[in-house]
Image (cartoon, helix red, strand yellow):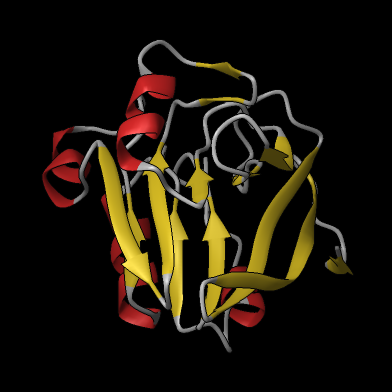
Length: 175
């Protein structure tokens, strides 16, 4: 299962997302979609799983949940827009993670690309794809792409879409 992970688009969708996610089976959006049309465009391209973020209006909130817990290819996943990061989680998140016991925790909101294990919570992997839109303080717009097989994540790549507010040739880095 190939996954394209995006967050914090804030109503802007770089057309190169379709190139980078062309071979993905699903797109996961970690919130702050910004515009219902953006979500519809992604959904017409690939199946989308996602959560709403703090800037999303009632239309988006009616289509996406606040949080999402699911199993895919033997991997337990939990997604929430405002989650903090290990070991400094947002209020109430640590207890929710202990309850759900995901192997992968995905969030957005910070606009900071980060992938790291949390050894205190059952060796859970934390992922934040950074921000793909132009709104915010981040300097480079980013995505993540990875594969899941038999409960394991592999071929994790960081995709840079260019500087916030400027167009640049895309790059991809394996991790």
